[in-house]
Image (cartoon, rainbow, N blue to C red; front, top):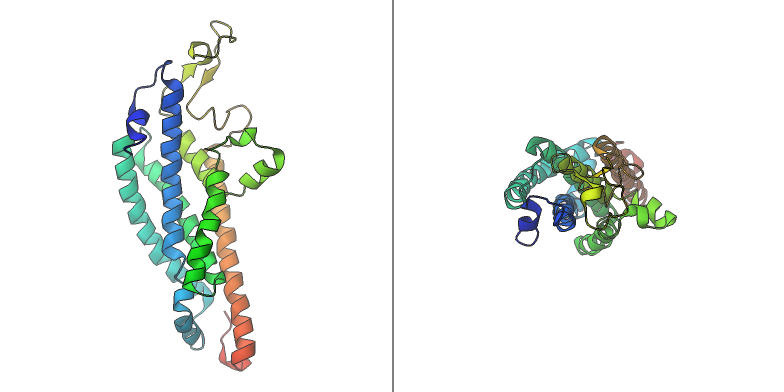
Length: 263
């Protein structure tokens, strides 16, 4: 917040519009990325680190849905606390103007997606060290393809389609559009560099326009939330599939078939 907070908190004018809008977008993106990282890092070693205990409990009465529900509940609660602290710091340092409960709800959803991704990494990895090594490889595309380094509508079609699969892209758009609704909206005719716009034009631009143009490439807050919920459901399904697959292989190699309860 010490880097972008002061700029993001400035009152926007035609003279500083571009700088302030970029500071707001960068602050929002880093906040969303931090929430995603909270979830991933909290969960990346949860399954692989408890694999011997998990196997023993599976032989008794533990079902995969119950195991996953317990992990999601505990890790989700931890992420909610982290997001609450993070949002408080950002709101003060960057002068966020959007309703904080609404922003927190979206931030919490982002962190839950991160938890599900971390659990998937943990379910796939053979050791905790491998899980930690995989995590940066998972997070790096989410930074590059989120749309803050290069707007999505300026990417080529193949890369843009890949970016639609990134939860960071939807978190960034949802939170930025949400915040831009409470920020000033200026006429394009008043902005430097838009001298070709006829005087008196009613075309206006908000702070999300550069990254997500309202007329062509903006899906909105509701669509962003739905995309994040769909991502969460798909990744949780992937975690379940990985655990079932590893169960079957372990059962066939190590145990009689009647000793491992079906999920």
